[in-house]
Image (cartoon, rainbow, N blue to C red; front, side, top):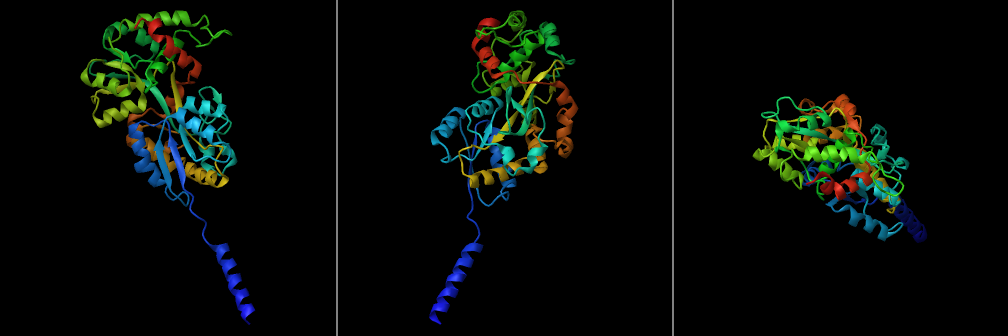
Length: 369
């Protein structure tokens, strides 16, 4: 009898073990892309919206991409302690080249099918092969004070041709800035509009298409304000003070700054018809974390790509959705942002990371700044 009781207790113990709830899986999210306002948005809005996506917590932190890449490489296979990454296009291209990212298409992320090309396939000229999910998409744009610029230029070439109308009151961010890439993108697109293909010879030198375009930029530079801002915030301050009345910056930053009252309500945007660069902020999962961690991270990404989170992000932050959730946007967002058709028509592929880096190195000499 005693042996039967012991056996029964053992069976119950085994049964209890088999039906016990699985332990919660906490994940660590490293954000290498967001500015201060977006860091706050992740913490106050996105994370709470996705808190029930899986059984666990999200530990969120922001960090530099270079240190994060080294940390991933140093951890080695199976020893990773970072579960989700948020990366700019050139950064995910670099991480993918290093072979440190998991293939998201092999994980359970149903909403991955709702992401749209070209950003779902390519970043900074690199084929992603499933290693990144575009969470938001962005565009750069001409921005201007309509109190002084009643009929804004609609192309980079028109901006050049009419430069003397706003002589001394035009500016873009210094392309050498380490905290804003807006200036590098402006120079790249300006050069492209004047015939440069931003290509290089086999020896790594500028090909023949650069020189005539640099000459146009040097002429344009003579009409610019004496000082280029070295960050997005200081560029907006130039608009707020009236020092400049027309320039080039990220569309979302311009709209968000106007909403916050840090630039005048008369500030407007104009997507250049001869093409403006765009890109995405990418969610990715390191390859060196366990299958359990990957599954939890995949559940969070699936939530982040849902139409509810996508719409909230666009309505709050004025980034374009990373998925096909355009119909979910609020009337307010639709009123101040370009439509999907306008965004798509103006979109040009991002310049290569090589070209952008080269521009940062030689711009001052080439432009005469």
